[in-house]
Length: 112
Length: 115
Image (tube, each protein chain N blue to C red):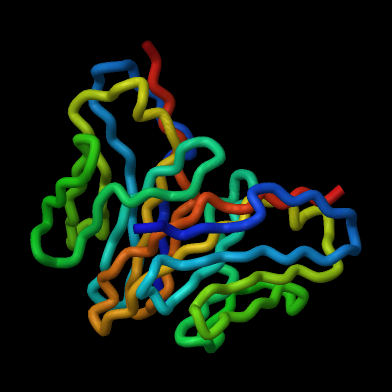
């Protein structure tokens, strides 16, 4: 079985502040983990993925995520938020399945 | 290279009618996934097709069905539409590798509204 929990349905930050979006996973086998971004009325775009090559993964638009097996976490961070980062962010896991399981999403709000 | 394309972009149906949604995967991808994104519920897995066969389905009633064609395009059919079927329906395609580490590529979605 596999599942994802995203803590916080909404995260609000000021422009220039650190962005931290939390993701915890459950998987019966070593997982593959993904972060996607969704802008209004659009599909999902891949930000980054963890495939066991390195625990710190760098993605597009300045985002990165760190895989921590002991904490079963894969939190997404960005040092400095931009207004254009405002969107919905989804964490997903592939454990023993070919089917990605998604979290409920976190809406990132960026204040000027 | 063309991405995943879905049609139509918007669809308005009356309760009880049938809806058909279409998806063309990225060239070379054999797997197609369908997800329902209702407000506040994230992405709920509907169906997975690979090599023309239904491989798995999520916890949805049988009135949600679909198929995959020889060219790997897919359609999702929703019969006897209910108001709560109103949602964004997302299609994604992927390569299937034994390591399971390939990502899914998403289309723009079909916004289905049931009135």
